[in-house]
Length: 151
Picture (spheres, one colour):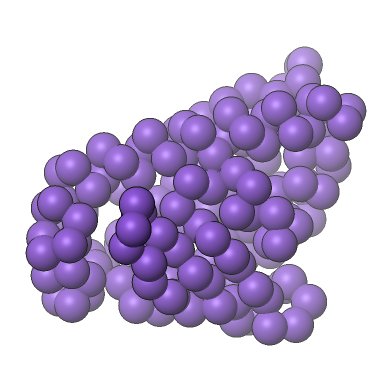
């Protein structure tokens, strides 16, 4: 059964500035090493669907997601339909700016097809999750740079 994953970074900017970057879904490929494109089907809000294109090396695959939480300057989350994972970004004000938390939750486990694909094409669950954690840390580091550079 997959684990829930979480990474955190402190950013020297107020939540409003961090939110402006995190909630701009078209920028997701700029930060995420796995995301090639994230296209919202309408204005981002709870209930909006997205079409996503992902890659790992030379392997490419599409996913669809639904935004399940959209609270400006506080939290944003989407549920991947194909594997039931929920990805979220939570913003917490700090004395020096914002703490940004990225999580991958699998509240009911992933789908059978997703587990088989991870085993067959992506080297198994443990290496896949280690790669996800590296990617999550890379994503937050890039968001931090983008926010603070334009702060």
